[in-house]
Length: 154
Image (cartoon, rainbow, N blue to C red; front, side, top):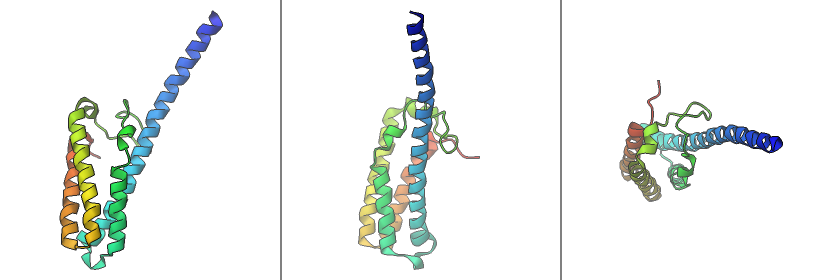
């Protein structure tokens, strides 16, 4: 009986330790996905907003497609319980309110996916004005979620 109790205790301790690591792993992957997306957002911004004379249709299409791919990749699985308190590559900035407002999260995620998919579609057309307008809508969708569920960086 003592061996059984010891085995249960060891399993509980190792499961608790693993759970924390799993949360940190979710945060790392989530942070990596958003960093990759931000890099692609930066490529579009550089060519459509900052220096439109440097516009390269193929690069903008590739960046827009990458953003849409991340948006549609199933990121929701990386927001498991407790991932508002862990550390990935750096401390997470996810607010605990995220888990208390699932309907709002779903709405914001749906809006973001729609705008990302539309950006990929508009980029195919190559009209810089249209891309710029849709890029603004994507930025608004990002900001809506950040304002509500992300701690501001110091």
